[in-house]
Amino acid sequence: MTATLIRLPLLAALFLLVLTAPSTSAGRAERKQKKIEEREKAIKMANMKAAGQDVVGMTKEAAELRSYELRNKKKKGLLKRREASLAQVLFPGASPEEYGQGEAVPAFAELVESKKTQLPFEFYDLPTCPEPSDKIKKRFRRRKNLGSRLMGHDLKLSPYNIATKQSKGCTPLCMVEIGGKKLRWMRKLVDRQYRIHLTLDQLPVLMRSKELNYAVRGYPIGFKALASSTGLQDDQYFMYNHFKFTITYREDPGEFEGIRITGFDVHPVSIAHKVDNVKVEEGKILENSSSSSFPTCTRDSSPVNEPDTYLALRSGASGGDMKVLYSYEVDWVESDIPWADRWDVYLVGSPDDEIHYFAIVNSLMIV
Image 1 (cartoon, rainbow, N blue to C red):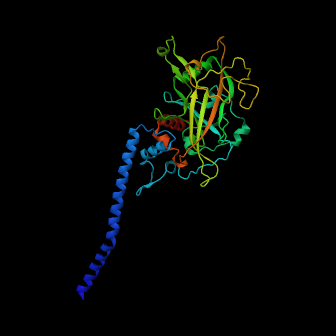
Image 2: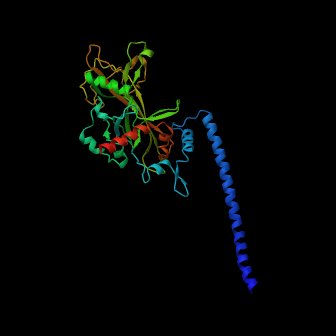
Image 3: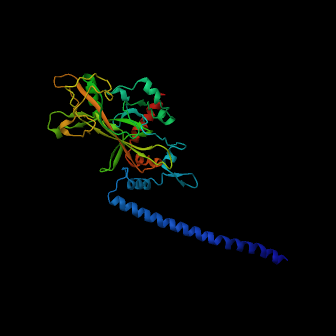
């Protein structure tokens, strides 16, 4: 009787081993197959990089390479780390916003900052186009989250008029005059490499180059040409006054209505628009005005950076204030990039984290 009782637990243990053996071997085979797939993926990505594939573009290949390089950051959980999108990791609970055809999409201006000095300025401290009216601002009031408050962001509605899937060529925005102290201050800002930051649908604006494989947040106020490169006696300062905005979006009627914005890029241009023979009230918004026309800015044109037409930061020919015509254009481009992956490029590019670190410190000191 005793021997039979001893045999029963042994038989039970043997039975359990027989049952678990197939599952253990199956798990081992699954892990082996996963390692093979990871090795093949690594070889594929290495070949893509060797072939010169960039990681900042909006193509399917660039997005795949971007996602692979960020694979360790796309993990959730402490013990069992699960694969997730970067949007779920950085902004848990955040949901995409859909926009209908022709719906207005507000662009907000943040602080004007520099890596050379930690003193920020407001966007409308610059000699730029006037801020939209209070009536318009109430329509697009945006509540600041904790991150925006800690970063010291005081979001202002920008003067640019952007509507869903409505591309536009060169559009005159307003005319301003810069002279005296303001002109000298602008040269200092250019010399100290101040950058303007805009956001659209929570996305910071990017300056992106697939050829150079870089992407940086914001765009500079202008640029400096050293005397050694120009052959002149002094350094020359130029400002950007035309902005080419490219907005990429995803459209999938089977999954959601409208469109989702997946990218917000800018290409700044310095161009001395021909304004001498055009009478325009300073600071007046010109976009919806038919009384003014500029030969260098028409609906069918797209200004480019040409050394012969750069807008120099210096007084007018007669010693008076310099006249600046601000203009912009918008190009909507459909993309296959999912909304959840739209933040990937901000981590593989060249984000100016040092600026934002000091912005947080300044905010805490002020509070």
